[in-house]
Image 1 (tube, rainbow, N blue to C red):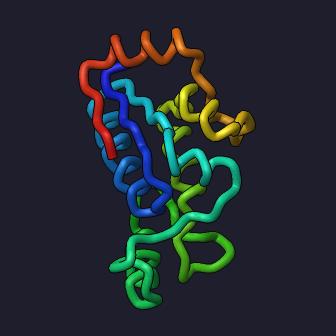
Image 2: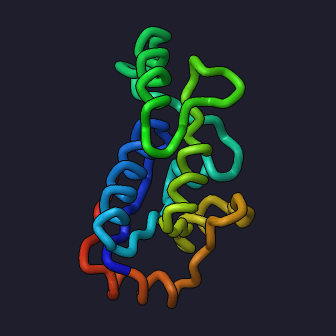
Length: 140
């Protein structure tokens, strides 16, 4: 793994930022993993995404959805074109080669053990190996 991106936030905009970075790096030939911790695990377990206060108004979300229609990986909602579907973006990133992991420590702390398909819970040993082998670790 060349790059490991740690996503701590449950904010949709933080997830989107990490996915943009991951896809850019995959496009450069790097192996990229995204590891979810903290609030992000609540989203993985079914809690809804939130948006940062300055991004949650209807006009801004509508603008983002319109612009998302032009993205290389589609993440405009297929049900409601006025919305952003972050899960569609995650699926598109996975298809491009981004790997998705769960931090075992936060999984245990929060008592969350079931995750969406394609998101793998690391063992403590795998977490150590993944972090040791990463050339860069980014925290978002």
